[in-house]
Image 1 (cartoon, helix red, strand yellow):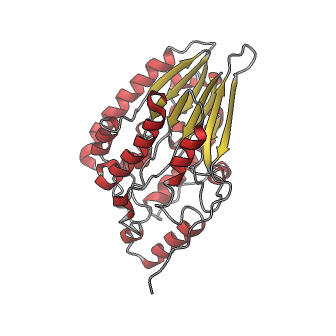
Image 2 (image 1 turned 90 degrees about the vertical axis):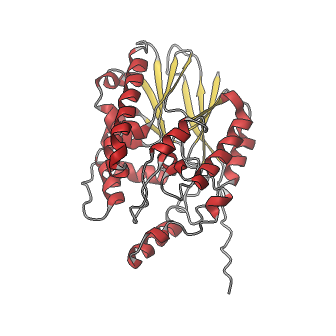
Image 3 (image 1 turned 45 degrees about the horizontal axis):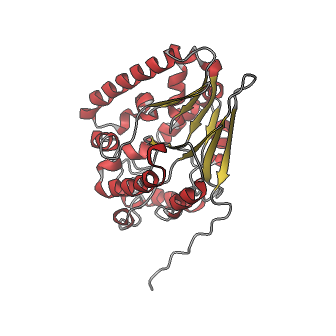
Length: 333
C-alpha cells in the first residue's frame, strides 16, 4: 500500500505580504466594483486573505506516515499580482515550502499554481504572469513543471496547467514575454507526450494539475485521448471548495461573458468548456481552510493498492477545518 497526501492553495502570508493590508481594493478605482469585491470577499471567498498560515502547520501535524506528499500549487498570496517575481510573495512561498520540505524531505514534490506565476487582479486588471516568477519557481524554490511516479500498476503524472492552458492566459502575459512562454509550453508538451506514449496498456493513470482550465486542452491532444480509458483520476486544486466545484459543474457550457472585464471573461470561457472534464474523473482537493461560504477545507489522501481486479485507488478528503471561526477585525477609533 502507498499513501500519498496532496495539499494545495495554502496561500501562506509572510510578514511583508501582510503589511500590504487591503491590497486588492487599491487596484480598483470604481467604487461600485470595490463594494462588489468586498462582498465577494466577505461572504463567498476569503474575508481575511492573510489569516491562513496556521493550516500549513496543522497539515504537517496531521500528515502522519506518508510515502509521498504532493503540493499542487499556490503557496503565496500573490499580493503583488506578479507571482513570486514580487519579493514579498517570494518570501511567503519560501516560508511555506520551507516548512513542507523540512517536514517531508525528499518525499515532498512541489508543483506550481497560477498565483505562483502571477495572475491579474480580479477587477483592476493589474499584474499578470512573469517569466521571473517561472525562473524563481523552477530555480531556488525547487518547484516542478512535470513529475512522473511509477507505483506498481499506477503511473502518477504531474503537469503545469498554466503552460497547457496558455492560450487562455494570453491577456495575463506581457506581449514581450509571450514567445518565451509559448516555447516553454511546446517543450512541456513534448515531455508529456513522451511520458504518455511510454505508459503501458495495463497501467492506470492518475494526473495532477492545479487549474482545470487546462483539461479541455488535454482533451484535444491525440496522445492524451488515446489513454482516457486508463485515467482513474485527475487531481486538481484552484477552486478552493466543493461548493465552487459544484457550481462549475452546474454552469458547464455557459456562454462567454463579454464586457465585464478580464476575470469574468476568463472564468466564463473556462466554464464553457467544463463539460470536457468528465472523462478525466476530476477530483478536487480544497484549500486547507475552505472558503467563507463553505469552511470545510482539508487535504487529499490517495491510497494505492496493488490489484488485478480494480484500479486499486482510494481517494478522500481529510478535514482540517470542520469549524473555522475568524477573529473579528479590531478597528482603531
